[in-house]
Image 1 (tube, rainbow, N blue to C red):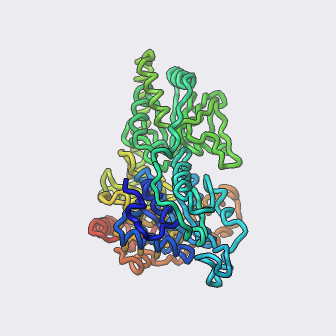
Image 2: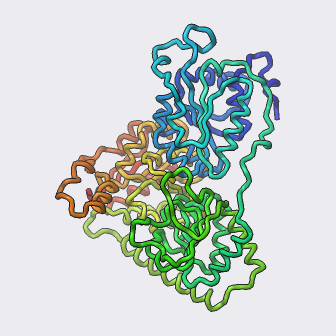
Amino acid sequence: MQRDSEVIGTKKYTASDALLSGLQEAGVSYIFGNLGSDHAGIIESLAKAAADGRPMPAVVLCPHEGVAIAAAHGYAQVSGKAQAVFVHVDVGTQNMGGGISNALHGRIPVFIFAGLTPYTIEGELPGSRNRPATFLQDVPDQGSIVRQYVKWDYSIRTGKNVKQLVQRAMQIAESDPKGPVYLTGAREVLEEDAVPAPLPVAKWRPIAPSALPEDGVAEIVAALMKADAPLLVTSYSGRNIACVAELVRFCERLAIPVVEERPIHMNFPADHPLHMGYQASRFISEADVIVVLDCDVPWIPSSRQCPNPDSRIFYIDVDPLKESIPLWYMPAERFFKADATAALTQLNRHLDSAAPMDDNKHAERLARARETHEELRRGWNKKAQAPRDGVITPEWITACLREVIDADTILINEAVTSATAIFHNLPRTKPGTLFGSGGSSLGWGGGAAIGSKLAAPDRDVVCFTGDGAFFFSNPSAVYWASRRYHAPFLTIIFNNQGWNATQENFKRIHPGGAAGAIGDCVSLSPSSDFAKIAEAAGDAFARTVEHADALQTALADAMRAVREGRSAVVDVRMAAI
């Protein structure tokens, strides 16, 4: 590795230089950022590196901080590597908003750097306050804005150990359960002299994956072999692509049906006969042994579809107690803090030397699963037929899209109440082809699609969103950045002109509520011309579709535009809620 001192020469080497070269050494490819007056030293360091021909992470300007963190989120999901997000002091930090919550609950490693307001006033040090805004941005505890949503936060106190801080932050972010980290620095400290020397990154690796205890391996296998109605529920075990093959092998050997409960990754091939769909509620009360593998909410305790009190439940997760959630419990016989891939590898090795499962029981389980698998698909296919009345449904949208994407297409799912149609009609059979945010803050999809496309430039990316979520996504910033950085993708808007999730929850809690009481609170009618917003901001292909017969042509045209280098937005008008 070339030493910083060899390329800096006689130029001043600052904490800003150390911060950027530390990220470069850590393998960060992109800084998704919205820079402000507190980043003068950073901008100078980037300019020096460019003039000297030194490699640095590429800067992707995002005109809104929510887009920046969503893009880093999407890139990390596809690439498996944490990226950087640079934002402005307190106000820029606040603008990241729900994106930090999504990264935390989605277990996404993100390195966030934010400036601090200068801590000198009278010009005592380089970078001292020089504008009215630098006074207004002085808050007592900037880190408290995000402290509930990050794994680690700290402020640079000297330019002498900046690289060590970068490596510690990256090590924490990329250790399970992965998540965002937050580092701050004022202008004065970013201008300080630093030591131009590389750091041995290999000595700052994330913690090794944790495994199951041996007695736990034997207990799980024995319980599953004896079971009459076993079930495995997962949501994000496929975050590690290698995990999918291990899970398939394990479930095939014991004929264990699998449910992907509201998945945020592709975890198990949807065309496999052991795949039981996407809602565990149908099977959960009849199962006598349940393995929950990387799933935050496998069932809703307040619903009627809960496990039988006599069922044996084993919980395997990188964070089985969900320690960042104050009130959470899913009673189980045993909880294991283990990496899903490591755990499945152990279970498969145990089966290599264990007595084989009874052939008749295995055959009976497999036959029952295959019958249910096929029954589910028949029901899904019936709903995906062309609507006779011309009113577009989520099922028809996804059925039409099936004709213009392939098995490698990356699906970014933020459709919320229309998500089930995506799962049913666009079955994923390859790892790394489906992603959700993992959190609950809407507006993630557009930025995530940009990050995904930058991480996989040779693959198609399709983003699903609702009209409400599209508002949250800061679409003008999204499509501007998509155009500037050559990251085209297709957006499908399930436009029902309202907040359907809010309406559904109201009806569950107040089924006899006053007639019309919810209308003004959830209606987004008249609808905005969403496609035109994207066209104006980023020269996107724009199409609004209101009749079922026009949908197939519109989607084909849109995907053609994406493959030619333009983002596309198809605003699909469904029945209004």
